[in-house]
Image (cartoon, rainbow, N blue to C red; front, side):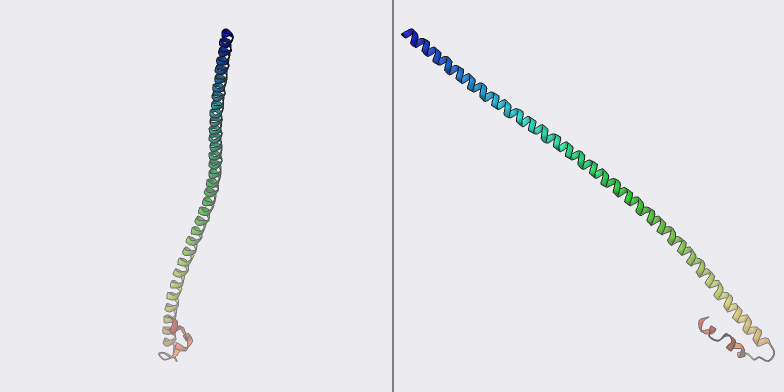
Length: 139
């Protein structure tokens, strides 16, 4: 009977030890599983971040290329407008020079005509002024 008790106690201790070992192994397996889950989760988050960063970089590059293209187009337009402005200024300068020359020629012609008319017989000084009426106001 004592031997049976002792065997029963040993079996009980062995069963307790086995249960404790099984419980420890179960806890370790659960801990390992949680650690692996955290590791997998971190890897998935890292991959997602890399994918997002890559997608954002591509989008940014696309926007930059579009901006550069529009900027180049605007520069072409500005250069074209500046060329037009230079041409218009040159034309205006030419017209201003021509106008100044024509005014000088007109004043010279007026003076010559007045001198001619006054030197002709039958005209007195100032008598030919009616022929150039209105010009004295402008020139």
